[in-house]
Length: 461
Image (cartoon, rainbow, N blue to C red; front, top):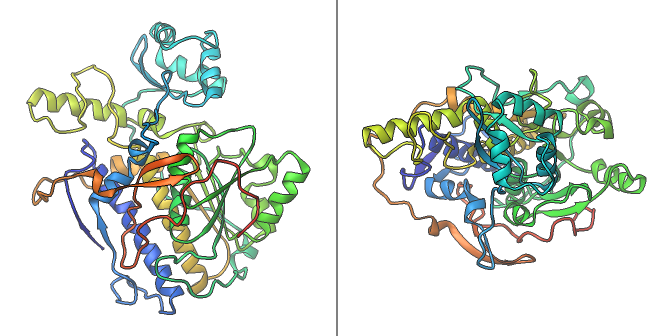
């Protein structure tokens, strides 16, 4: 694998650029290996064997894709990525980060704090300023709302990926043959049930759709998605609505599951178990399945069952505090580098230059699925159960990646417009980021723009 393009991208006090390019590179390599296998070539043991297309990743493309939601415009309009009630707020003893982008989360947050449903950001700020951060956090958790106290850097190390036990029958189950596929669509014919929301999971399935998979996103009609979010992550996919509590819809879902190759979920641990969609139940019905589960806070420990988003995990594991301290240090020294946020000691917490936990985890999930597809058909059949978390990616960023070094940096300037194009869609004219997957013969763009959320038929193509 080689890297090229501008080095001055995703500036941060943490090695975000390295995380970003590594996740895209490993996904590109997994796609190239699957392409080699499905093109009739033997997949080598070592990636240096010429049978696998060369992987060459452009750092400019990676940086642009990692902030795809910020580059998106719809008929010239720039979407609002964070709602007024979402963000950092001073508390009586520190800071707290809230997430209230969805109406039901905003309602729960205001209710947990004893505020009226129409309370504005000013009233929220006043109330939060009189309470300790951890008390706010726990009151929000009990109400199903989202608020996390800004914490110092955590020494805890979560695994980047976990392999769940699937049972003896699933370890040897035969898998569906796929046949040959073009190099730019190595996942052609692969059926993916997408039970994910927001960014990380949808980025993973958006990437699988880029590589030719038939991706069908399934949502409950009771949990509507924000149009702008789907306009960013819905490329290449189809989207339908099914209520698993309704017998007729459940029957349709089971028919889809019966011939799916991959299921990707991004709900809290245990949330799907009540619908008979926990790992044990899925592998009992489909022992050959590739199941990927994503959560926010890891799969063990007291926070495993809590809701979470990238911004909240950044606050809870110490990234926000680290970036604030980095910015303050750079400001004091006059260097002007670091996270790019004006800060002084004790000031507002900082953020990463991208939702890097979301996007990075998304590419890792796509890589895991692609690798599993190849591995099933070249080395060992049977199902696969893979688990990821935003906290796992965060601890890798904090503790597992070597810091950036300025020596030998490329002087090439970064201009994101090189990796932005315009496409007509059901939502209007979209300006969007191109995919960053880079191997010889990789697709340059998605085969279809996003359709309207929830309007596709619940069938496989």
